[in-house]
Image (cartoon, rainbow, N blue to C red; front, side, top):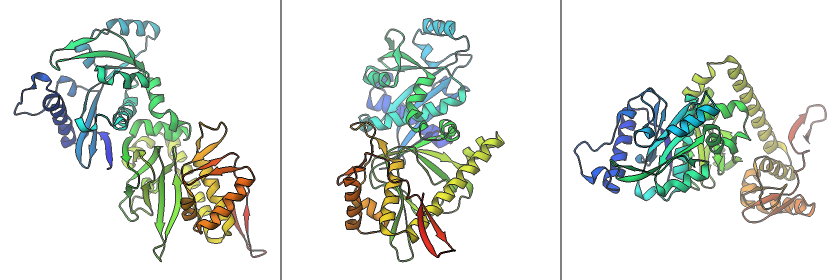
Length: 417
């Protein structure tokens, strides 16, 4: 079941936020007096001030979760309506006179989704990404006891006494964290695998999609206007030839980008993207990316250089699968797997890819028995270990199988490094 998490911008999306708050706080939790009212919405004056954004999550078009973020204004922050955080702000400003405060609150999650931690964290990551536009140095939140530990894992610390919120009929706890700390939690893992250009863009324009295993994100020939970065999980990129045989172009993991041609030309998708595991994607919208790059011509050049590199990689892949011998095709597939594999916590210095022989065979377009033969040789050489659902790389794969060249002079095909 696909879950889409985005900043509410349209009138309907913003209205969905207010209605969702009412459904959760009043109808499900009995807060705010627990009495039905014909308006069926919860809204306050902090929803109308500059520096506000509401993040909303949809499952099959139905709103399931929301959270609000506010930048500092002349009327203060929502948390200051019922919590005394003056000492925290005073101490912080003494340490950093340029400190800027932002806040997060109005968290409302439908009952059936409250045990889905991945939804809560994706919601918060999207909010943190949106907050980069406000240059906040610290984030202040008010939480309930039920979510105290979740915020604590991210790096938030309690900054005041529990306070009773009369409207909500519940105790709330003020917490705060330095913005760089929560930003590191939200984007730190993926930042180590992408260029600074993409890291900066993902922080400012990102929305998210959560996919279950085998869910299709898009099909070949679908309209294209977005690209994606994998925050966690695995995606398979495939297409069909004239005989309707499936060709696995790539199996991608954390930090990989795909669908980027949509950012240049739009049009139709040239391949199908399918989740291999539970996967969280960061969405890169064409209009937002172009708006950002127009601010700095040097960034546009960097974007074009990135696309040139991707075109070369695609040409290389097609040459391997068209001309290279079977053993080289398997080794080429292993090389690509190694480059996208994650560090193995159980084996320091090793990398692990959670794919099986069948996936490698499909990727290489040869029989599983022939893949097994190559894997056994690699295992005997002490380069890998493998099982039904994993390949563990103990050493870097043979770097010589990296590029296919055609020689007009001797009419030979060489696999070179």
